[in-house]
Image (tube, rainbow over all chains, first blue to last red; front, side, top):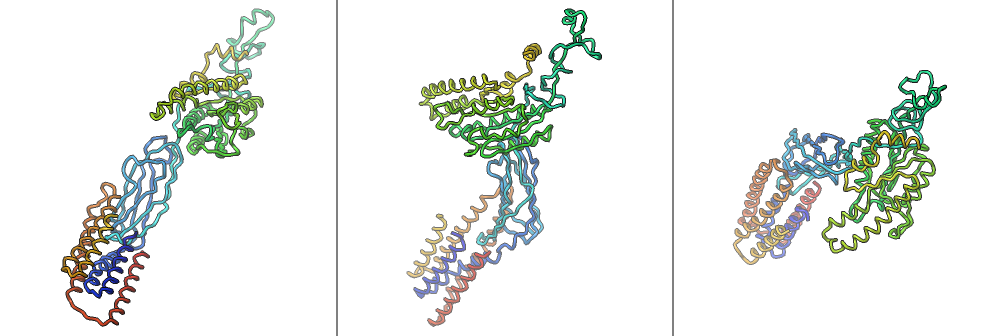
Length: 445
Length: 114
């Protein structure tokens, strides 16, 4: 109940009681409250005329990095005896130092400035307007207003792990030189084949062993050209695929997407990103640092969600990716053959179809079994279920192993990532630069 | 909530006391104490939202000064009304009551509007 309402009810009750009892003292008693009400009205705050500016120390930061927010409030109106000013800190950010809320006395022309520090997890955050509430000295009359303040958005980008080298072999490359083997002979570093000597070939290219067998002809070594390529990264944001109980594996997928995008762009490739979840969030292909920033911002916005249209991977619009290009899917994968799934969603069939259409498909598979198992083991309430859990984990693990083998046999490159292990370690083991002699063997096959 | 109840109970007790012939001075003091306690509790709640270094002491001291002046003015008015005997006919009482209620309604409307 508002204070004014309460006091007015008391005054009315006293007047009524005084009149009914014909008691002047009771009537006089009401004067105490009337005086109090009048005093509040006399010092009621006038119109709020404030100039408020908000400055952020950075508009894009990494996860967990502190951001200093400075709020400057200038009172261009009449003096305010008691004013509560609260900045609209977005939900999801935590204030680690200082306070976004202050109670002040603001004289005419006075400027109040304060700074507070916020931190948060990956995401895009828009600040709400600043809310101001002024009171009279007795707190009876208040005047509230919100002030829309510009400079109120913050991108918290996912952490970017530096991957030294990510080896890929798409069927088609672009014309510009890069680091991806192009399956075409020419100048390069890796042995590709032997051809007849052509005028202009450097003498150290001559393959003396082959030339010795054919005395009439000289042969030169040919090297595999290295070029840039088109890479489409598809981040699976389907809720059913990512959510296990209350825990989501999506943050790990986002981390992998950021690291891979950074690595591919550093190698000079043209990279695009598709976040596939509640809707399609498409980042057009591009090169370099600008594209890196675009992708990181898209990843900051990425979140899991469910949609009937995008329940399975069949609806990925593949025309977004150039034919025969490299597609990297980051997904825990749903497998319809599993009796544990109620529906018939089958990501495996779709990936095999994709491979059949000529795309070079790589799947980074954040291991959902290991993830969920570790979550259950960490939960003290689940300890009694551990023997059952162990058995269930064995069954599910066998199913997933079979599923991944099925994919590998179809020519899909699968990297199973136990998210308790560092991503760099897993990527280095599976996608690090192979030794020269292994590349030569692979190239000749 | 307890302070709100305290204010209402104090007002009811003082009214009952006055009707039963208790010393009116004490009843006024009791009512004023209830009002001050309620006010100070409200101030405490508002200032609890302040951050360190907000100059709460200045706000508090200004509040206390204004509250003190209000209390003194209220006491004087109430004491004056109790001590100066005025006799009105029923008609005048009705008119004055009507005016008082109208005035209160207007005051409350202003306060709500603000």
